[in-house]
Amino acid sequence: MAVLFGCALLARQPAHPDALDAHRVIGTTDFDAPAPAPAPPAMRRGMPGTVADVREGFTLYASGLHGANEEMWIPVEAVMSVWPETGTVFLAAKGDEMEHFGWNRPPASFRRTDAGHRAPKSF
Image (tube, rainbow, N blue to C red; front, side, top):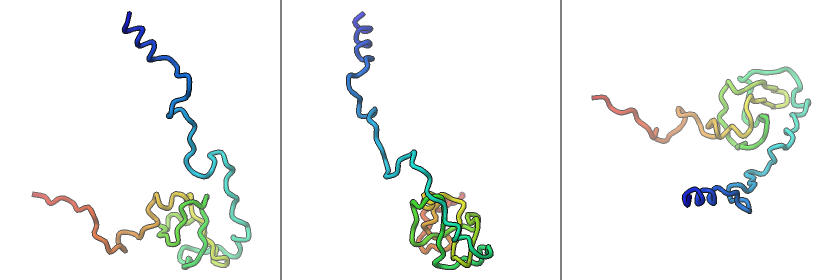
């Protein structure tokens, strides 16, 4: 009986919320915030181009602007459309995915650092 009574006391609802029950917000944007405004139609002026038309200084548009860096290494597969007249490139990725995909670092073929992992030697 004493064990059951002790377990019943431990299983009671606390009178005040615990630290894990408190509402916490991480980040600066509300989760239910409206989506960012689409790129202005004036950015899609002229004839569409190809990936070969992209030059340094072009403006990259993705859905969201978080994670944008001064220098990015974007793979060809991520380019949706290129507008050379306005210097605009639209990407098929969210803006906050740049660092997640590693586009803020040059590809391994361009790096001058040692590749940290080597395959084990076979016997």
